Amino acid sequence: MKRFGVAVLSTLVLSSAFANLAGAQAGDIKVIINGVTQQYTQAPVVSQNTTLVPLRGVFESLGAQVDWDSKAKRVTASKNEDTLTLNVGSKLAYKNSAPVQLDVATQIQKGQVLVPLRFVSQSLGAKVNWDKTTRTVTISNQVDGSTTGENNSLSSKPFTAPVTKVTYDTYYNDSLTYDDAVKLAIADSTTVKTAETNIDQSGKIMKEAGKNIDFVPAEAGDEGQDKAFKGYAQTNLNYEAAKKNLDMTKEGIQYNVKDLYNKLLQKQNAVKLAAMNIEDAERKLKVAQIKRDNQMSSDYEVTQATNQLTQNQAALDKAKKDLDSAYVSLNQMIGYKPEQRYELKDKPVYSEFKDNVETKVSQVLTSSTAIWLSEQKVDLAELSLKLYNFSTPGNTPYEAEQLNVEKAQYATEGTKRQLEEAVRTLYNNIKGLESQYSQIQAGLVSARSAADMAKKQFDVGLATELQVYEANLKVTTAEQQAEDLVTSIDTLKMAYEKPWVLQGAASGAGQ
Image (cartoon, rainbow, N blue to C red; front, side, top):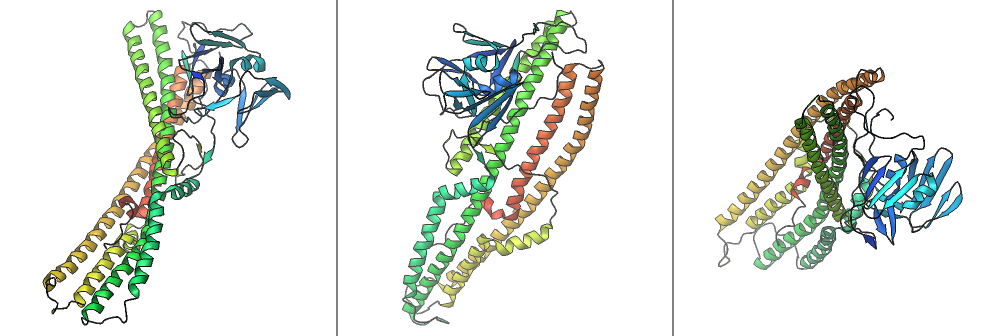
């Protein structure tokens, strides 16, 4: 058996329960390759009386290198002197340019290309068996007589591979950048369409109200003219607010897409790590079983290891569901179907956050649409006070109009305080996450050093394969924790630049 190296897991993308292969039969199908039970994101299925298996997971387990061309939707696999190519949706594949007829066309489900089981033997010369009774596929290419039988030794040499090999290799139907996601979300947003309609509507109302204005009153005078001018001032405010509301709505969409996009990246990391933890638990279970068989421990240790494996499997199931939900949330935002899956092309890169929070507070208070709207309401209230006509019967008391001005001023001050608090809170949160990032980076140095040492010790027989795996798992865990922090910082930085996006789009001025 080959010595253990660091496992590299491709990004998992789960398809939702809405996507099903037409004519596929339900039921779990087990795949065993060279004695090792496999586990795939998309389980094998039976379609048109033909068993279909995940191409990448099976081929790579048999030693082939697999490449995916997302634009052409073409898979290329190579092993030794053989090269295989096939296009999704086609019943024709090629082996070294020679055509190979497939029983059914290749298909994509849950991000993975499925091919007829018989194609495995046709293409790679592996021995394939399908047990219809137990619904088990057995594949083997161990022509040298090697086996994966039990090894009850606790030496530093490699022991039997874990019972289950977890593979999450994914073919993406498409790729998605953050900028493209924003464009899609804005184009699909009914809120944007409503805001655009409000601009058109309020503009027409303002134009009509302006027809009744003969002059701009400096003080209270003709009651009809005063009322007309106040009405025009209100419609003008509504028009300007509608334009700013559209801008703010788009900014809010940019932030929401950023938040969902980055959360999806984090959920993908969570699935990768959960899959590696399962393999770690399986290896520990194997060690516990060997120790028990050699009377070096009791059944209790095996039971504990089994329970840990069960917990890790439950954690993986949850991580997969969370990932699926994250895809559905972003898809809903950008107008995609719930089952659509794609590769995320943009991953945030860490850069130290350097900014003067006092300067930022000043900039935000100057550029905020919410503050602008509050200040305009103050001006409107002051205009009503300026044009107050004491001779009009049943008019609102002058003192009440004065209180309206004070209320508008208080609202403006409250909005300023909220935004200032938001800026300072976001600044502190970003710096706090940066501190955590620095700590993880320091820990990574030690983890990588320990992993290198474990590998060297393994090479000279002083460490076990499990110890090497665990050392590398610590490195991977820290790396993914660091990536998650970077994505969180990236989201907070956008909110820091325009904190009003956290409060939603500005509402239009009162009618």
